[in-house]
Length: 88
Image (cartoon, rainbow, N blue to C red; front, side, top):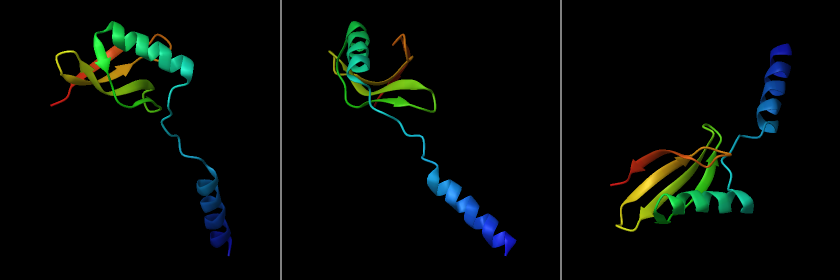
């Protein structure tokens, strides 16, 4: 009976604990990200989200004027681009 009670309590904790999820930028963060990405020469991009595992801002499919696409990582707070990965 004690084992069942412990298992039930453990399951309740797992259900009650929210998973950490990536999040979209606030309006202020989005403006700072856009400024940094445009200053680096990018003209458009797709999704932007804060990756809680990093934590870094991830910018998917950022496009240069020549059409090349990159996935970017930006440092929170400074919005410095710390990684550029060329997409095929």
